[in-house]
Image 1: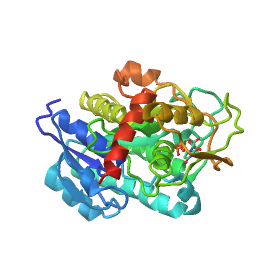
Image 2 (image 1 turned 45 degrees about the vertical axis):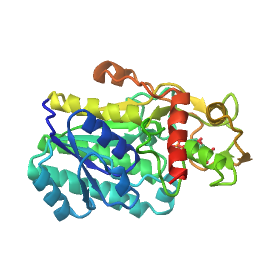
Image 3 (image 1 turned 90 degrees about the vertical axis):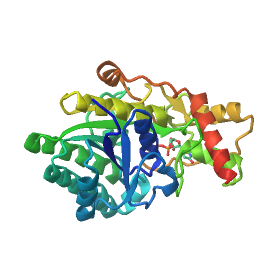
Image 4 (image 1 turned 30 degrees about the vertical axis):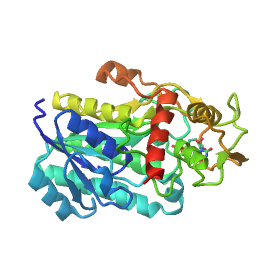
Length: 330
Ligand code: UDP
């Protein structure tokens, strides 16, 4: 592979994981071209290459951007990802996530681009019967968000068979943390994720954190998740891209740490790192939350040579807290 400013189209490049991946691509010598409709992404998060504002459902715009930049590959993040909203408004998810991906794949076929790294999710597994989750664990998503991502994985496989478009689907566990230089971070609106919500309770943006459920069948009664630093995820995308540039076949990988932390353990980590007490209340379970989700990352470790370097919980929390304070001071 010869980076030499090679353009890579990053759909959703103004979003949380997309923007961190753009930064990582730039440090490796590529030119990340962010394609984003800015519905959830932020213009200020696009700093390492051009921003092309556009929507995946506008195929003419997509073709225009592809033809003007001629990317060597595509990394596809652009998707809606609010689980609760996907239950109440499934059409929004199928139209944007599935319909948008179909446009993207058709545009790739028409322009001869044959490599794509896809942002999939552990939500495609639903509630697994066995832990930790392997890539061979049956995929039975329990909400339209997870179902839309699984459909996208199926589409990728079919476009490889029919048109030779090779893909790597990365099924991430819980993305968290922020750029350790403090340039970008997690800025969801509305914010539903645990760590930013804990930090908001410390700075008074919300009165207190609500812990969703304390009666799960786990050691402390709260849900257990596998938290992976967004910089490690960005690195995983780079390795997946390399896999495709090396001419290897389509594949799918879990990206996580293989370690689980409960909600209470994450709260303790925040208290340890910030030196503050988290104001909290205990609430009922959030519908659709599986008790435990942890990954088996053996496949990514052995075949992609994937290793995490920033995902220990204290580093995750320190980077998120650093970005949160920078944001609060803006
Ligand atoms: N959680 C919580 N309070 C919050 C947000 C999340 O107790 O304000 C819990 C949630 O129920 C889950 C864990 O924290 O058990 C991680 O949730 P998050 O939304 O960050 O990620 P998910 O696992 O849903 O992708």
